[in-house]
Image (cartoon, rainbow, N blue to C red; front, top):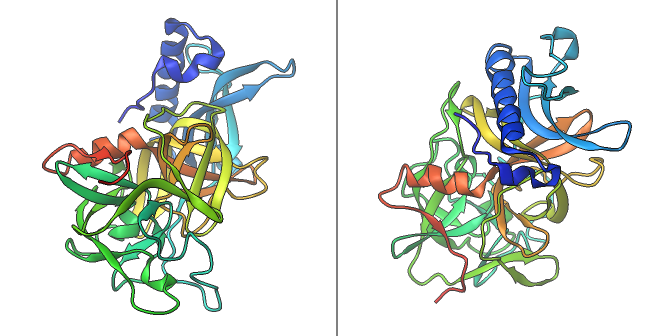
Length: 347
C-alpha cells in the first residue's frame, strides 16, 4: 500500500513536482528494500532534516531497533533524497487493558461521564477491562456512530459485534452503573502479519443520545471541531484530548510512515502513519488509555488524525496516528455506505 501523499503537504520546502516525485520514489524504494526485507527496520517515514547551515529539507527517516544488526542504510536514495537513521522499536498500542491497582479513575473531565457526549473522553466495550478514547462522532446515512480504534472497541476482533459501548469505559466508573451509549457495529480488521491503513471501528449511537461536535478540554466547555479535514505535513502544530493525558500540544515530525505495530493479535504493518512529538520529546504527547484520541490542528481545531499508539525514537517520546481521511476510507470499505465525520452541532 503506497502512502497517500501529495505535493501540498511539502509546501514549506517549495518543491517542484519533479522533486516531489523523486522524494516519493526514493521513499517507496526504502520501504521495499529495507522495511519489507529486514525485521530490524521498524519504521520508514518522511521527516525534516536541518543541516549545519540551518537549512531544512525533507528526508527519509529509517528507524532501526538495534543499529548493530543493520541492514546498511544508504545516505541518499536513488534520486538523491537524503536518508537518515534513528533508533526505535515497534509501536505500542495506547489502550489500557485495565486500570492499574491504586490508580485514580473518574478524576478528570476526560474520565468522567459527559453529556452531551463530546469527543476526546473515556470509552470502552461493556464487559471488558479495556479503556480508550472516543475519537470522533461519525455519520453513515441517517445513523450516527462513535468512532475509535479497533483495538479499543473490538480488541482486535475479541469483542463481538453488537456489544454495548459505554462512556466512560466501565473501568473508569468510580460509582454507579456505566452508561451504554452505542453498540459495536463495524470494524476495520487488523490481521497478524498483514498490512492495514487504519486502526478503526464504529459503534451506532442510541436514538436518544445527544452529541456535541466538540472536543473535551481541561476544566472548560468542549471546544467545537473545525469543519475542514486537514492533511498532516511536517512541522504542523497539532493538539489532542485523550482519556489519560488529557489535552496536549505537539508537532508533526514525520508523515507517510510505514510502521510495525505490536497488537494483541500479533504484529501488523500500518501504512501512511503520522508521527507526533511533544516539545523536545522528553514529555509524552499520549499514553496508554489515549488510543482513539482526536488529533486536530492547534489553530482551528480541524480534524487531522486519530491516535492509536506510540513509542520512542532516539530516546524521545513519540505518538502515532492514522490520517482521518484514511480512517474514513477504511471504514467505508467495510460498511454499506460512506462514513463521514459529524462536524456540526447535534440536531
